Amino acid sequence: MSEPLRSLDARYYTDPAIFAIEKQHLLASTWQFAGHVSQLEKPGDFFTFSVAGENLFCIKGKDDAIRAFYNVCQHRAHELVTDSGNAPLLVCPYHAWTYDLKGQLKGGPNIHSTPGFERESICLTSVRLEDFHGFLFVNLDDDAAPMDSWFPGVRDELAQYVPHISTLTPTEYVEIYEHTNWKISVENYSECYHCSRNHPTFASGVIKPETYDIQPQGYCLRHTTECQDDLSDMTYPIDLDSNAFAGKYSSWFLWPLFSFQVYPGNVLNTYHWRIGERVDEVMLYRGWYAHDEASKAVAEQLAIQDRDTTVAEDILLVESIQRGMNSRGYTPGPLVLDPEGGVNSEHSIRALQTWTREAVDAHL
Ligand code: FES
Ligand SMILES: [Fe+2]
Image (cartoon, rainbow, N blue to C red; front, top):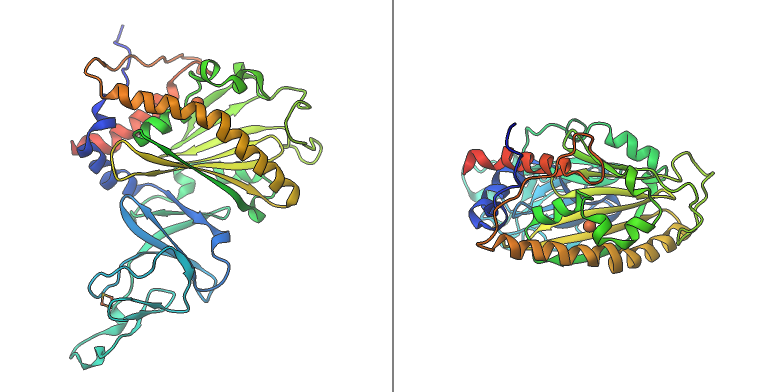
């Protein structure tokens, strides 16, 4: 008999050197959530964000195309924009070099006095961008495979589960600081071996816990479950006849830092993690989306309910685990891997830890 597979060594969650490797070799070559198209209504609208420690921005062009760039001037590196706003042209605050919305340098004070200055050859550095049903993702690796290769089937499945997905706008963003490594938060989200003990609403709620399963689908971890036949106890109204997926629950975690989650009633919500400055901190954003006044009211109610139950329960868990990772008394234990899968198996943790090792170990 071979030895059971053990969980990752504690240093993967505590060592700043491994955190630095992750930024360079994992977060800079995977698809990362930037924002939502509704943040960019008009040409010139932009917003800034960061990925893998890099400062970036998305902007809508006069051609209505959305582009992403590194937020750095190609003269002497001043940052171009801050926060969010609208700009007909991008004017660098340092010496006023001016770029159009496609990132092309258009002019700058006295640049023509310089012999051989080729204005046309200077352009902001662009970043790969994909629009995934209105959710904008970037990848700092220009050679990365497209999202449909990383996450097979997810685009079509989401369109079925959320018929209104193209008309959604964000209604709530709940920000949660967790004093823990990002992988502890992601692993906790991605297994339900802890659910019956720690989430009272899980065992008594709308889903059938014995049917809950989480399986890899490319670099997606797909959560599936059956719901109770009678959904009349739900805390919000659902029209089960409105479409074939109205009574369903599922989620799609997109490695490494994002998840789409759909509750009965086609209610779309998201998990989005952003790494902190330090190895042991992460920000989690719970996004809630709606397409009309009724769904907005539902999203507002669910955001509060979720913050007070699942989120609050999980913060205690992930922060305790981080303290445990720092203990000299901890030796990583065997993962519980049930060949049948199911709610009480950690095969999803095996997948996450394999993906972590794939990205990190060659650089240790
Ligand atoms: S650094 Fe931007 S114009 Fe000089
Ligand atoms: Fe949990």
